[in-house]
Image 1: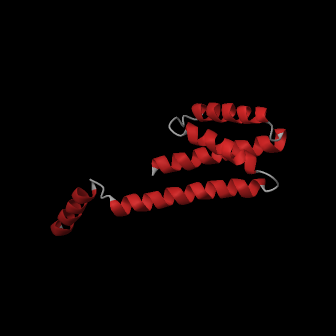
Image 2: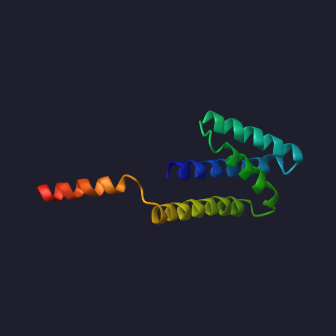
Image 3: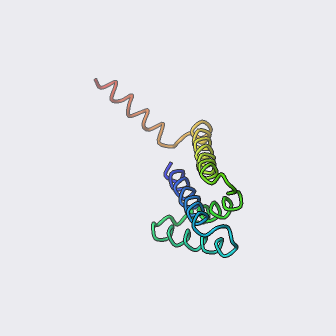
Length: 115
């Protein structure tokens, strides 16, 4: 769940920087470089080390699609990331049993039997 939250945060950061810099500077090739550098530096500063690449790839991927519907693209990108995180969490819970579930159930039974 923590990885999912960090991934969603990094996608929001990347898309947010792309949205902001697209409005201020436009969609020039130098802006791509500038967005990548700012996104990587911000993620490094915020200690989002594992998902820095996701933030910069999201920023680069969203920039060419912003042609009149910038806010819509931002929301679409963030929501698609959120749906992916939710679906992967559900699949992990459904397919893989957590190792701590069985000892937790035993402790609950012991507490119930003691009462």
